[in-house]
Image 1: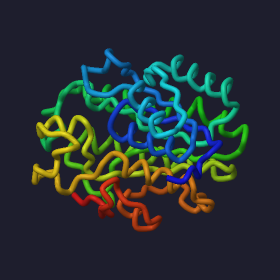
Image 2: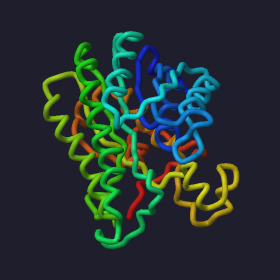
Image 3: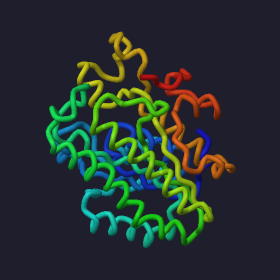
Image 4: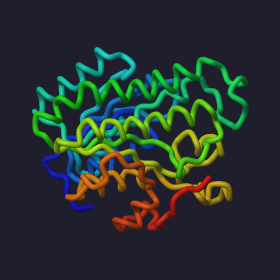
Length: 280
């Protein structure tokens, strides 16, 4: 990959696994200095899930990039504030912020379709405190640093399919809150050099998805149910394409699907496929 983001500083929250890991790695390959934040360290991962900020940083280093593994619980405002201050002290700027932190898996409760009242109320804390508010707080502390250079890109990872209901009440409410957050921030920042967007990947072969099908990245093609999936690096390439777009301001406040961005910018997934947008 061409190092088109050389000199840029990025922060990817929730970068231990899944979309966050894929985005962080692709930004690192493109030349950005990537701060990877999350709660999981090697040997001390959330709920013993696979992946950690250390392993993501190592993958970036192995690809020739620069990364900083940062243990941060983004539900703790003081830790979030300290991380942004660390970036200010070490780099003096923040060019790309990817809000990917998500607590929706913390309860270990599936989000299969069922009535709202059959879900535990605790899902509010995991999806809104550990997801929506955590992303809001990161913006709160990061935007002043980005304003110092009056430039930058803020990306919220989300899920969206032309405003269709996402089957699970809490999940639908949380993801649409993120979409509206991107839209509202875009209004507040419209007279600045900062652009805010939301990006929706399709069904990703994350570590947890692969584990649920008892397979891995080398053997997923043997599972017919996974033939519509995309790797977490696909959304990473979408974020890189947006970060390289000199006219990105025209997309301010929009929610975009990775499959549509792939067609627009001409990138593919790691297996060479141009995967269309995921439809419910």
